[in-house]
Length: 337
Picture 1 (cartoon, one colour):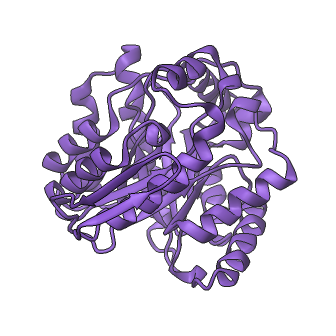
Picture 2: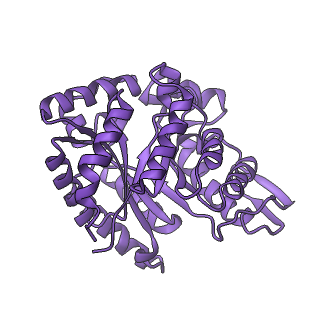
Picture 3: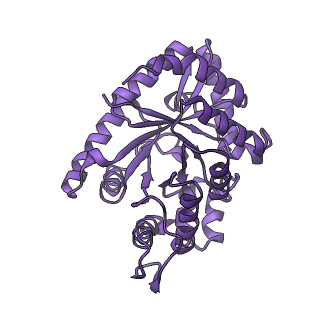
């Protein structure tokens, strides 16, 4: 089985919440890189629904503070709000500044019914919730075109332009664009699934358009089943599924008392998402318990076929949890291949 890499999710919303300082994110990222345990750093994205340090600005700071790890946004929920040409220049600039380490995972963001703040976010940006799929797909198409560095024209349903060349050109060629989605475990619905038709469309979108898939709130068995569907669809689209990345966005809390680990995780996630998740929802989204249990659960996910697991420390004690992960979990996983 190929090695499964790990990424550290930085809690950039925690700065807005006052739980940590911006400098803490820089220091955590440097510690994560120096440990050799992580191949990537990830940050989240939101404008009004879940405010935080802006993703591209933060990743640009991390580009100067690190030298090896990939720098990812998972997911760019405001992708449907951003004009693709301006964003293309921003993202290409990040790729240049980081020496070709940028990793983009776009997503639809939440619908109006998720929350009043989410509905307001769409409204102030002039985007209807019903337009999100079309804007995401067209935005990906435009990025693919302008990342070539050639002069291009485009006439789509939302954007039109003639003879445009965006510079700088990304270092990576092609510059990877992943899609993040969790159609069978919607966060805003407490983990409920979308309709069968919506799930089919979402998985097909990954197979047709993306260089990789990032998902969450799935068990190892569920991931294995859904990835098999995407792989079949990719072959139908004339694409090689083995060339596509597959990542899990998950939480971890290391504590010998699993009940306490899940309780702390729930308190963290409820505050982070301004929500009130059920204990079952949190348990399905978190590796929790003793180091031995966390090791076993991570190995189950790796065996399901994941190429990457990004982990958010589901605790306000970010440094303490990172220390435990590096000293009590990583050594056992280091020899896995």
